[in-house]
Structure formats: structure tokens, C-alpha cells
Amino acid sequence: MDPSDTVGLLGLPVGNQTSISSDDSNPAGVLPPIPPVVGAPAPPGQPLNAPILNHPQTHINNAAVSEDPSGFHGNILIDHISFQLPVHNQTTVTAYIGKRNMMLEQDGTVVNATNFKTLTPLNPNGGAFWFNFKFPSDRKQKLILVARNEFGASSKEIDFSHNRNCIGAPLVPITIGDCDQHCFEITNIAGNLEFKSKLKHGEITYLEFDFYGLSPKTGGFLLTPGYFSYIWDDPAFPPLQPGVTSVATTLNQEGKDNICLEIQSNIAIEDGNGTLSIDFFHSRVRLE
Image (tube, rainbow, N blue to C red; front, side):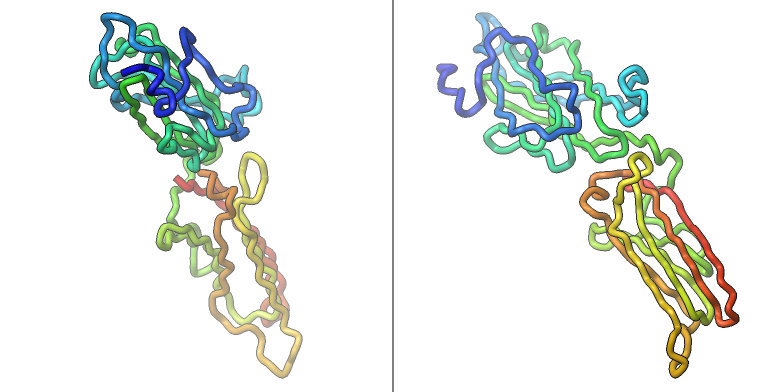
């Protein structure tokens, strides 16, 4: 096969280049669509096989303090990269990371990546090359690993995340607290998480009841805030009768991208005897 015939299918040649990458200083910004890259043709005497990847190993830790003094990032190392059959040393291997909406399209273009690196290993069959990325902690991430040469291409996709602010927190779905008083109830309904703050009460004449969820790292809202307000102002009707009052809500788009959530409720309640009480209930939960 003439290598020029493969450019449109497999990407653009990189010649003798051994590595390319995106700007490491902007790990959170979404990059433009990244076209596929293929190396030069196989040198004489080297294997003429398509690069069919085995499953790599990944190792996730805190980012180095020197690079991340505020503690906002994790680090992923991708190694033990190998192939089912030997490949030649102009085979390119590219690692992309991004949010879960990152995709490898049929033509080899990758969309919604936040960072990528390409290597052309001089010894691709020894497993002695790796990739290393810094990425935001407490956010859902995806890795796409692509190997490509003029004989074909293959890929592996791995979902990953780095739990930094919810270590030891319970995993949803779960009920937290005493539902005979006040509890959080988190359920999975057809793949969608529903969050409820539930208050059991006697007869009451006044209630202010809110429910919201925040990122422990940034303080940004991850749940659509919910609110219930009641005041008994018409003696012709009875006050709010004993029962359970709930405030329900769901993750906003930012919340769907996160794995760590601080849920909180503030309650101000006045009973039929005129006694006013104020309560604050909160907990952290892991979304994966």
C-alpha cells in the first residue's frame, strides 16, 4: 500500500517526530477537535502489523505539591502499554484525557479532549514508554488511548476519577440520617439521581426549608437548589398537619461532571405552641 493512500483514513504523517502534546499549562480547557496522526511508513525489516492494543495499566495519585500547592489536582500515569503483535517504530501512540463527553469519532478525530500527548516510541514493543497527566480532582474523567500506523488503528477507553475531598464519604444511592426526624434520601431512578431532604414534623405554623449541594473544593452549586416555605396566616384553615415534608432536586450539569458533593439543608420551624427551632443538616457523598 502506498502510504499516501492512508493519509485521509488514518491521519497526517509526523515524519521523524517522537512526541507532540497539547499545552500542559491549560489542563482544564477543552481543545479543538484533534485529527488523527500517523507516523512514517515502516522502515525496512520491521513488523508490518496493525497496532492492536492490549489493556494498559493506570495509576492515580495526588498531583505533586510543587505543581499543585492548593491541592486541586490528581495525576494519572498510563504505562504497561503493549500490542498483541509486534509493530514498527514509526507507530504513533496518543493518549487523550477529558470529561466523559470526550469521544473518538469514526474518522479518528477526538472531540472534547482537555489534554493529549502523542509518542512515536523507538522501541514500541518493549512496554518502556508511558504517559503522565495532571487533571482536576473530584471530577469524572475519561482516557482514550489510540495506536495508529499505515496498517490500521486501535483504541482503549477508560473512565477514571480522583477522589480528593470525599475520602470516606458514602457512595450514592443511600439514605443518611434518621428519617423519623430529618434525613437525606438519594435514589437512582432509571439512571438519574434524585436527591431528597425529608423532614418529619408535628403540627406547624411556620417552615422555611431549603436544600442544596455544593462542591467542597470550589463552593459552586452542583444541585439545582430546592426550597419550601410555609406560613399559617389564615385562621379559617388549620395549620400544616403532622407528616413528612420533602424538598427534592437533581444534579445540574456541573454536578453531573463531579464525583464529590456536600449536601446541606437549613430548617427554621415553628410548632403549634409557638416554639421556634433552627436546624442545619449536612453530609458529603460520593457520586462514584
